[in-house]
Amino acid sequence: MKKKTYRNTPAFTLLAWGSFIFFIVLITIGLYTLKEPLMVKGYYLMGTVGIISSSFTVAKVVRDNQEDEERYKQMFKAVDEDAH
Image (cartoon, rainbow, N blue to C red):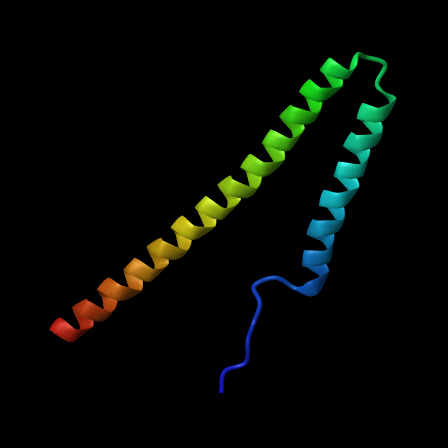
């Protein structure tokens, strides 16, 4: 039976989530203490949320494309080996 393995160590996962939460807290503090109207704060918040969500999406798409490329290479390698 194969043992389940993870690509990232628990320490790296903790670092990634820790830094994400840390910077969310910094952005929240910065927006709260900003001496601008609510409309300006909302604009900054909207832009921040957009950047965060799109960065997750881009990271997933890049990872999925790389995995697909590796899978196709393995698939065609197996077909070539069967042909010979």
